[in-house]
Length: 131
Image (cartoon, rainbow, N blue to C red; front, side, top):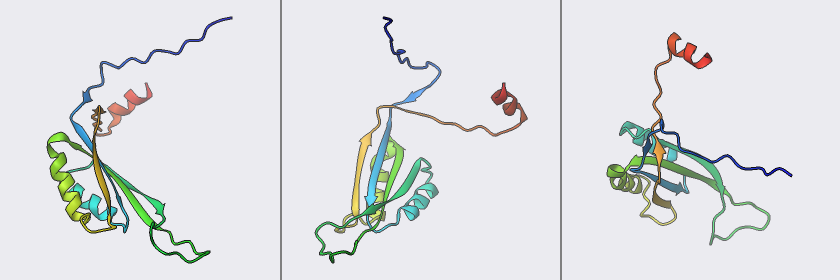
């Protein structure tokens, strides 16, 4: 009977990890994440995205047999540690999170992330990709 071993995971020395990034995440109940991302991109924050999910209100009276769901948008923004508090405050004010039932926002420190640099595509890089 042969023993099966899992291959040990080793970190690639060629990949440079960045350990000073934060992830700002939030849920916006009445939409507006698309406008938020446009404002963030105007300010130079490009590491952001959002997606739509279905929501169901809590504490509201519903009619039997009628689904009272609404669109909810979840967003994520990756920022440098020195910008995290300022961007968090900007998102809080822009999405009017101080008002009730507008949404929630929270921030987590990322243990590591990598820089993804895209080079311009030319014929020289195409030969490197196919080789």
